Image 1 (tube, rainbow, N blue to C red):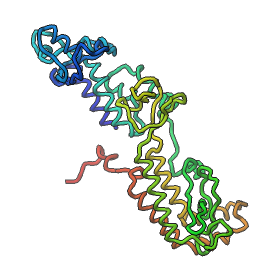
Image 2 (image 1 turned 90 degrees about the vertical axis):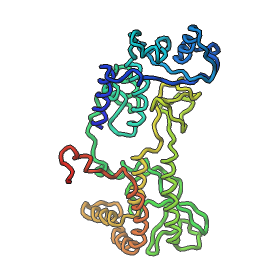
Image 3 (image 1 turned 60 degrees about the vertical axis):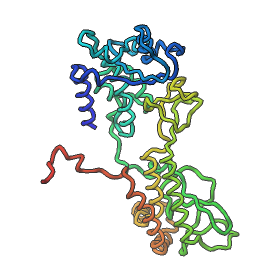
Image 4 (image 1 turned 45 degrees about the horizontal axis):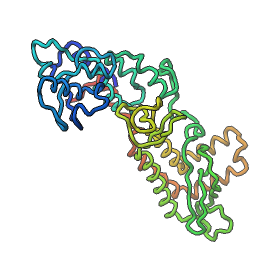
Length: 378
């Protein structure tokens, strides 16, 4: 991320020092109708350029492409920026003395796409990116702080490692693992041999586990245990369903009064809410993904923990050492159940592990971390 900041600072420096030729600032916009037919043409640079060309006797009609450059200083006002739009040939003329409005291009052309690209990177925000570009950060401070609900002074707060967070806290937002009995069609949940976490509450009954595997909690069910093939198939279906919610990319607005709190439309302004009419106004909230990379990774870890027999044995050992009264009456029974179901549970764990191996959230490329320290061997 430091390299991105350096590139942005260098780009802003080159633009302010006029080291980038003026024709690089050219904006192309096609007219949808006749220039005089726009009711709000005073705030549209392309329309203003077309009107200037018409006043000089040139013919401009609908569907023509206007090429122009914003010059002077608009102070962030759309009507001033529109009036400061000039045709490219006029700006490139040596006698014009017109210079591009650098702040306008940094604010409108550079910052929005950079913010969208850097949005998934944890630890960055629009205020920091605006500072790298040399813009007034006071215009973005409220916007960036509202997305996290914290002030900028808390950005460097130290958080514990994910692996050190207790399971009942780390997995509290995870969805329970639900199963369906193929015989009586009873839906029930499975929280592991020893419940390792307390995910979202479920009204479904809890599965029982015996030496033959998982059993349906319905006492009138004629099948003694859930078929192992059905267990793995339903586990695979749950995994794919969880991952599909991540790739569906639903976003939600953090403003409680917003009438469009959930959508799949992303604003060109990054995290800015599009509002009730999807016109990027009418709401001051910010949107974020309902299912992020971290949450889906924790969901996969939770499903893996349900079948992790090594972790279950560690829990039983911890209960013995600490003298915990929970499960104290059937600790030996739990040890026996671990041995009886180890093969089946290890197979289910390997299914989840296959998806965890494909996730990039749990991987850190050490070459990128220490690229500036060690040189690549030739």
